[in-house]
Image (cartoon, rainbow, N blue to C red; front, side, top):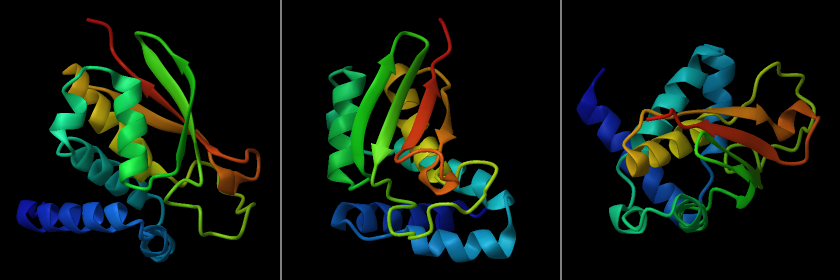
Length: 158
């Protein structure tokens, strides 16, 4: 992997998200061209970006308020916490940044579409806790079964 290129891509994605610009359309074309392998790439990119975002917001140790602030700052959607404990955080995103501009609500996709957000939130929580976290999209608006995208971040025990 070309680390210099990756860093430039992350910088550009951060700028677009700060301005509230769409990154979903870029993802759609690449997803159709490359297939499901792109999900892993977007998860990785999100995870890496989550590890370099706003240390001052993350320093207070309060995970949920930090996730809410970063969601708002980078126009990722509207954050709704559903469940939180020491082992996992479940939340939904209304107007999720990856799929909010896609008008089709039933793409018949077997897995979620928003792997970038899953990776991003995993990277943020990993940075805050110092534990290797994993996140997965449980439901995607594009599957036609939910009105919002729903995610779970798994936090390993000590």
